[in-house]
Length: 372
Image 1 (tube, helix red, strand yellow):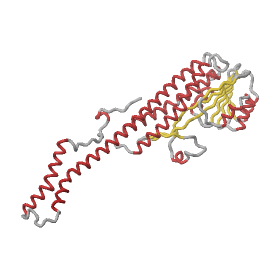
Image 2 (image 1 turned 180 degrees about the horizontal axis):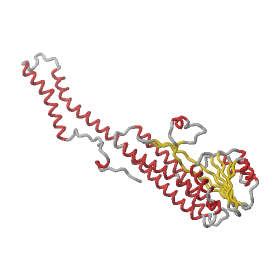
Image 3 (image 1 turned 120 degrees about the vertical axis):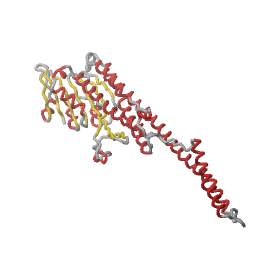
Image 4 (image 1 turned 45 degrees about the vertical axis):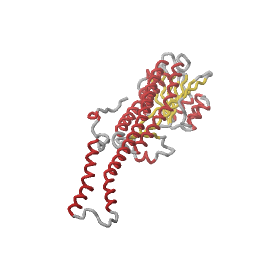
């Protein structure tokens, strides 16, 4: 679907075109206008219209057909220079039964999962391709982008934004896409805190699977968002060129700083996951030692009983303690008093003290979750 926001500089009025009107305006642009062309769920025919209207390079148009590109900035020189920019951002999807069943469908984007014992979050990556040239901005995306819709409606009702140039409109879009990652990181931080606390309360193998699933999610985010910093840095260095003005270039440096903060948050989360793995291994080893200690103490208590029962189970020609009273006292001494005395001695030594984690709250135990 093609839609166009077109600003006539003489009247400073914005026209919102869609459907056949947008296709006609794409092939016959009005002189002296600034346009933002947005194509969603692109088809080969719509990209052919772009090739006819703007004469973009075939390799750039081919990238728009296959949405699995890394963040990049390509400059095409000539009589009508333009920039081809690929950026990404992450958004949270509503977790539902249909989402779980259709995860591997070709019509559903790749899904990343992060979960704790209390909540589950599904993430997807939104990819946007943009052509930034003299007097126009063209965006291509195959999924609904809340950040793009927000900026579209903002520009639609404020002609001054489009009057400042398509490079400034693209800054607004890139900034909105960058800021959309912060709520995602906040939710991941909450899951990390819950995951860290759960490891001190009966850790299970499922917790280990959750840790590695979260690590996979953070690695995917770092692989996508880290190169995007270089893209924004290159845009800031294009200040004064034909596509990016000197007034707009400093704004891209601000996005670069935001992406640096996002990168640092992702790295901090990966460090916390490494600590969670160590805590899980320590808790499992501690629980194993506790079980072995209890079994060893039980074996030690039953050892004299086993020895004495085996001794008196031999075929004596004449059994000792022929007196019923003496035999009863001997049995009481061997099977009751000796194990009881051993149990009390182990307890006094502190060998029976449990090392299991306390169920008290972090405020009572003095352990507080780490906040990023």
